Length: 368
Image (cartoon, rainbow, N blue to C red; front, side, top):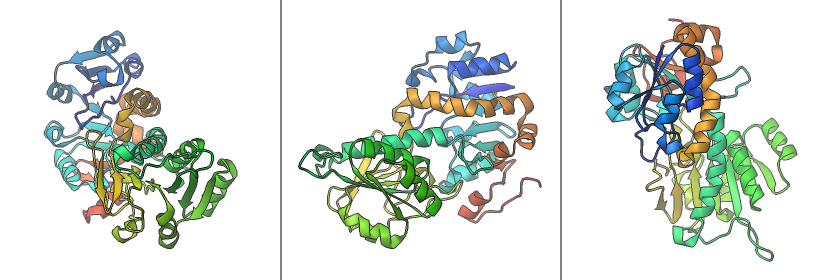
């Protein structure tokens, strides 16, 4: 198979979908790998490293798309890329369709085979291609939240861990999944007073048994969240429903309960966000303020640490990319049900129910 790796063109997206080591594995399996010129530079991988791995360097994004049977990316295609995607071409990337109708319509029009990292799902419910970036985003959410609590950044001027004689900041984490647990570990390690919420009692029991003592658990409800907000300095939104739009756990009215200079970090913004007042931001302009509360809603948080993120992402995606390249998408998805769940749009039809329901569009079961 001919595999193309374009340079990401989303704002401040420095990750690349494939490391030179990953390219070498694909070449060893008999596939051709084309990498757009400088695609890996933002992550610290030069064109020369890809060439040494057996990949070929192409000068432009247009040629990379035109020559590839399968495109491997990090983030969803954006408008300048829509016309470059052809019928029957496999696009393997994070799509997050449920909060982006123009992207959904464009991919339906392209008649491409759209396989979304975020909906590849194992029998136990784990999301193996989302986990590594969720780990990065969860840890970075605390790092960024702590930064924007600083007064020069618009925050209250609170040190997350406090000092002897001064109480630490209070952190509320909505959702005890991979993002939430990693956020809790980071916040607890810095000495914050941490509360983590979830609707699953078994999950909360596990958190209570495994987390540091400064992490408390709370059943997630609008009432309980509203009770916490007036005394909370930093709120992390990390709730995920695979492939579907995230629920708004903090409404505009609830936001007014928070103190001036408090910070919210919406890690779920790729799926529409956990806060009613959220809209996507970029690393160039990461925050805005509503009702005195600083909002951080960068849609590609791991893009700020591209070296770490690219290595972690390739570790997870490469086995699936090899299956797709070795067998073709149909056979690979027949053999691996987890990978089949990654199929969102095929030949102009939505084959993932949550995406169709998000926009009231027709859903076509995959077996049809």
